[in-house]
Image (cartoon, rainbow, N blue to C red; front, top):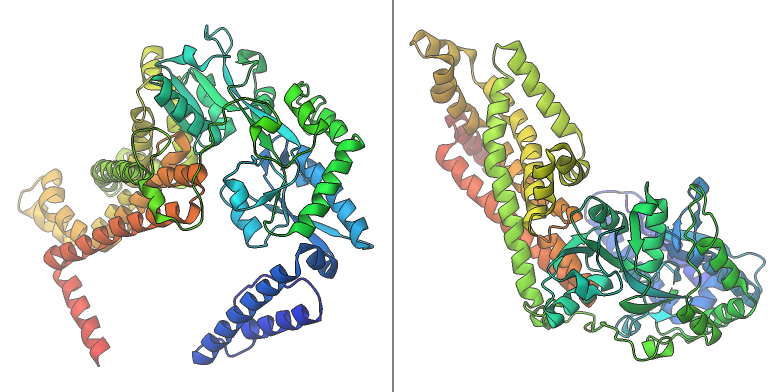
Length: 597
């Protein structure tokens, strides 16, 4: 069953198209050429329907459908997050709700249904561009490069890139130069990430930049001592510090090293809709609504945990609200401050891979190759050691020793049943705290990317070993018990029986299933980006965030994974043909003959 979205929001023509799409998708028969024809017709109608919606403009679409779709982030406190009862809330979300009320009045509608759709930093621009959402209500930065893809309402927040560190660290939190030669952490692919790379290269600061997956991990990396400081947006870090267990343990710089305007993201090339939204935002500024919302979310306790950011409105934001503007030029907010924003155009510019990345040394193509190398190193290392450990554990589970069986079973059940992402965080954050102080400190201060690679390798090795152990156990149990008895009758010890008789046969039997495990190890390696290892997926994500070449970056990553795994699959098939059991080869031949008949 296909589930095409109901993109045609109302009207006689669009209603008829929706009926035809539904008929093409749902009506019998469900197999054969007729189904393919109906699916093709449905796709064409969907394209025409979407084109019709864009042609008539968002205002007419809203009038016809009676609903508006708002994109929101689920964890960007205090701008956009899930509040009590899993209800979208936040500073920007409430501004969007007020805008929707004014659009309803302007359109003369009795009701305008507001529907919220979760978005991420990677999906919000595509979802705006393809018409899935009408406004993005999060913490999007208005930059000249993004204005080539989408439009922005007048600025409603001015963000400062600030430094956070442990209290009493001895560093000057208003000068990035004081962290020369230190490890610092920021969100992977963020504007702060790019700014750090540019500053470090230009001023020769020799910073070790750790890439975190989100603001929470950024703060945890600072708290555990893996980084001397975190570099991120002030609105987000004030909320993260206030929500932490020990807010007094952190100190935030009072002066930003960069400034960026936040605004609601809108569809491009729809002047009527943008004009209506702009007028609504200006009205909310003039009547004091935005100032009251600021006090509510930045100066008052936030449910459900009642954290209080205690972050007064900055002079830059006051200046922006006094003179509403949708400009991405920072001189409209703070004259003569460097932006650090130099992105490339989009879409579909494959030459972007040969542009210099923000580190000032490598092109994006070279960074993708570096990421590919780390993916291979992690997958191969985890597979090799995981194979050895998995064979040992698999053998333990088939011995006559109750203790060995119990130990092997416990290992498999623990590592196989805990999600890999959870294990990755435990190896990265918890392991150093459980080790002796000197060893834990050395692990935290290990030079990047080795500081992320080692926990990722340990995690993936143990996880792969638990899965391989089950394959080995099944393979051993598939070998006839008579083989074991024959070995014992010849005077071989238990170890020699396993080594020379049972394991060689078992491993040949499980070669096909081992192929899946080896391919899986390559794919599992992408989870390492959550602890700062910029392997292939991490580099692709970094490129798409810094250059906005979303499809190019992830197309390259897709090709990389496809090439690696195709090579693994073909190599394992060759190995199966060479060393597979006689029954396997006979089965393959029989299948071939059956297919010919």
